Image 1 (cartoon, rainbow, N blue to C red):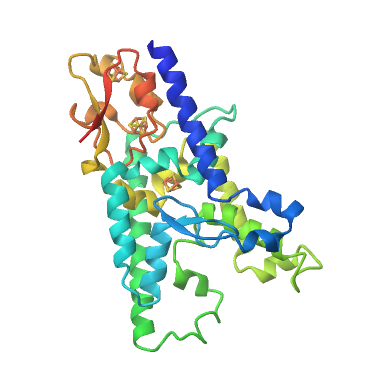
Image 2 (cartoon, rainbow, N blue to C red):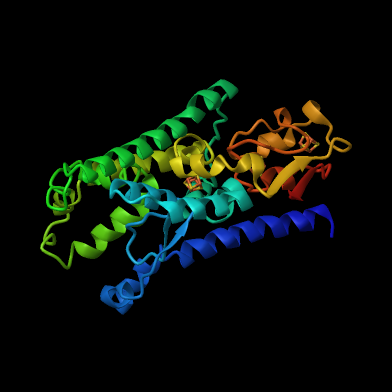
Length: 315
Ligand code: SF4
Ligand code: SF4
Ligand code: SF4
């Protein structure tokens, strides 16, 4: 098989995988709900933790973000032994590779980046500065969860006062209301489903009152999607705490990429680097392993290299 055919197969396989998981996770089930009835669908829901940004609260979903689960468990004074164990197993196998092949919100950003607008390539300095934001977001999310769990144990937060404030959604899972994936796959579908059939119904404006932060969250989602058209994987690069967490495993994941020093012609080429949607400076990484915590294993560098110098490695 020549390189051209191999590359078609890899690109096609990734796109099929992303669409498969978007459907499998139930994100477009809402479309069927209008024909089959929402109640019938709801009874079929089950949930499996996954290492990508599939929101816990999405209606009819059968998978949910393991990082959101970890926060929820901490904030309810439950130590997440099983969730952390599962995260480690996922992480050791494929690191942040699930972002490239499984995450529905990753696919949405990829689709936005297909739009024919002039692409912006952030400088090395911009990448380095904003790269830190997702780790700060990750740390704050875990801190709030652990702190909320402590308040539960000391009796300050109880079942009766837990949901009384507009800020309570930040207490259960701090990252969820800020996550644009949560807005797209959970908040908006929930509002569409519930508004006509409950006391919320009557006027679309009532949605703003019924769902805390609805207006701000939708605007934020639109801004992130718009920027993703110009800067590839904008949310993933700089902000996503789930990606930040799984990326910690990239340095020792079992499936990874490296460069063949006998084939790579180095800085006079850089085609792989220009193709990388995460802005990784591949030529600054060791030949042995592209060890960046941002690598989502999308294989765009692999298919872009016409010297066949990038290798997929296992163990
Ligand atoms: S970094 Fe991107 S692809 Fe990975 S979990 Fe977050 S939104 Fe999904
Ligand atoms: S595209 Fe291939 S040959 Fe060129 S710098 Fe990248 S790995 Fe090396
Ligand atoms: S280094 Fe290669 S596989 Fe990793 S994100 Fe960049 S293009 Fe994708």
